[in-house]
Length: 339
Length: 254
Image (cartoon, rainbow over all chains, first blue to last red; front, side, top):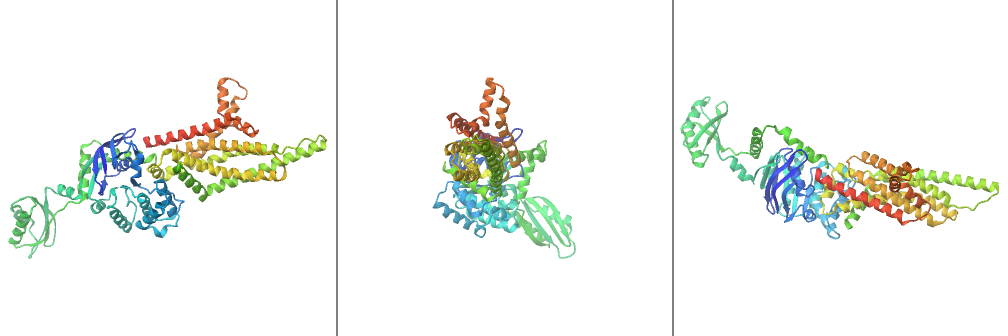
């Protein structure tokens, strides 16, 4: 549905997006991740034909963004970071206006307006002036605006930024429910959001593509070395840490044991090794054989957060500039002129 | 063109739900009303005096109308930038420009639609002066043709200032800056002919031609000449064309 190849966007003094390539299949929800100033907004603006790329090719539904921008725009619904609302308009009136400029005509228009009002739960405020709506409602009207012409592709720039937890959940549910009909790209720096809503993740940092994969694959890849968390308790008195570590080391398959914490007669260790079922069984057997209680034994799954931090910070150590001096100006110049 | 019409209607509605339309109309009605009053008083004064002198002259009610309409032209120089200043600057400030730029409508329909919307408000403003002038038709017998020509001139001149305003508004996101700059640029075009009054070189002829006043003078006298109409129309076209180019540059640079 969307293909991006070797996309580059240069501004006068910096490169906001640097040779990014990825593809999104029809019907997928893709999370677009990156720290502030990574180039997320710029990439999205290029996808929506708001900005032209400096080089590289971007096609949406088979249409090139430079050659057939009108065709692309017809197929894209876009919710920028701040919903583009005319604050003096009423909700219904605004949705009708957007529907018209997106090419809808009566009688479809009225029907689509009713549909999105229903779908995005804004019926309560449909006669209200947009300027008087709360942030949550503005966001929902923004979303309604993006889907009014039933676009193939939805591009959402930080759709949950600034909402309260309840609203965040509602918005996520809404986005998930839209997934069947639309291909969705959503940018965010809230990682649980991606874990919960997205199937596919694209991580960029300082304009460069760092990783693109499914959420599961990324987690597996990052926890490839494999480690297991064990919590052990003893019946009689405090546990002898050294002794336990020594014993665990002898279990076949274990390469390293790291002490995590202890309190009273409890102690937790992180055991690195092959981390397969056989090793876990051996571990359990060894612990019980020594007369200790095995309180907990679980694979230490790596959260997306850790992967993200790994991927985006490993780069920093190699570069001469810390992120704040190089990444930030990108964002500022990207947002400064127009938005 | 349909899209331009949608934008135009949106602009017009935007004017009338905010105080700006009412403020501009009221201001214009007030000041023009005063001009109407003092022009007529001066005219009556002149009539009485010439009657007392004995040399009764033919009464021409078009005389004061010309005066007040030429004043309306000057007045619009101050008021039209107020109408135009929010056109694009406001969209840039609030981010709604992203909605317009990512919708399947051409830049041309955005620019033309916005200009047309502002134009309709300007027509509403001029309508206030027409109310006053109609009174004169009720009590006197002015020739209506020169009045129409003068109005055509006013409309075209307002269109030029609006086009300048649209262009300036697309260069900034600050309405006040847009309004101020549009006013000074329009004033510059207005007064261009002053600098060339006693000069007849080719350069000053060109400057004189570019100035808004000499063209307006013809309309004011009731002279409808193609040359002036073409000047105004091409002026509007050129300013809107530059606005389009400015839109493009906004995209490439931002």
